[in-house]
Image (tube, rainbow, N blue to C red; front, side, top):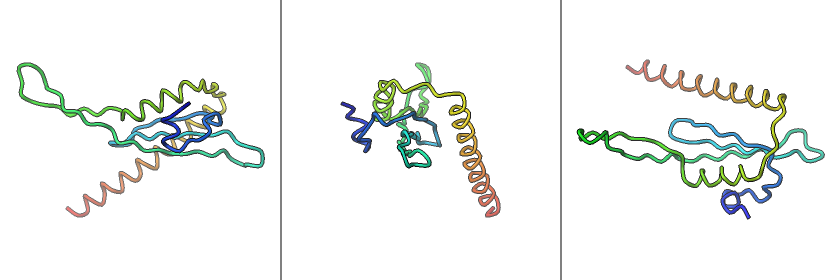
Length: 125
């Protein structure tokens, strides 16, 4: 019933609780969260990375310049449509707060890592 979810290894879409989508550089990161079952302390999640598509577009009629634009991977777009069709429950305020805090912590890790990378490049100069 959900061929694109099945293709990425999600066998039981009815167990999906929610998902998040973010962009890191030239990749889109889809994280799918599953409902907790009895006996589990925390819910399980799966992360999928999709390369963004790069398209060259003309700068206009009077120029010969081209610009590179990135857009969402078509497969990811189909997966998101399937996830949205599942009519996932609205998150409670507490869940939303936890999700935002989690995203913020992840962003901090990414920024810290990038700062270290740039500092190492500067030291090499």
